[in-house]
Image (spheres, rainbow, N blue to C red):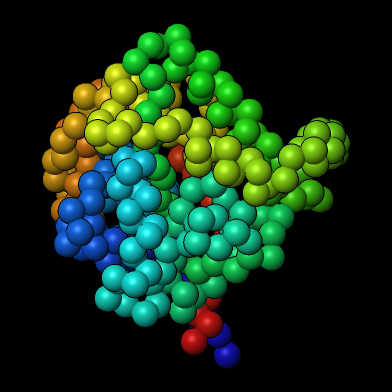
Length: 273
């Protein structure tokens, strides 16, 4: 009989994945940054945000490409694998995950694609040297991501009828684009500079949930790395992490109201071995 995985065990598995990922990056000269809620957790709590249950990392696009090309043949564990649309066209998201294949994690997604407990890996992309152009690019990328999200959302009987109706209309709109086409557009959204350098402004194109200016970052915030503590261990993040977090979240050191201190993930997980 398969053993169910509770949230505490889920976090232990995620840390093991993060360690494998971090070690691989160090051994292969790849840059990564723990980011978003994981970074807030590191700075504010020295670990997970108490009501959070996931791990996010980000890599410059050039390193992200190298990571996807080599991780699955260079990792030390047979059970830890990178998955992405580039590796497997059946995969339904535009950004990568590193997953433990001895587990199964079930989320409310319109796909039969099986994944295990995972961490998310996002590419950090060049936008432009001009801020107004960067704003336009973020809005365009947001529209592509909205269409992917519409394809991946499922109808839910617990959701208000009018929200399911809006979702249905959105699915009709998104049907004019294949998931493969949308993901390929995002993955080729901005060409890399020949010398591998950043443009003045950068952003996370794949998987964005807002096309606003809060997602446009100064490249200089990502031109170096620094160690931060997370769950008793040390990982890398970008040297400009304070400016990055303040741009994206505002006063991130202030706890949100109690009613907002809840997880945004709903999952079931178990071992398949």
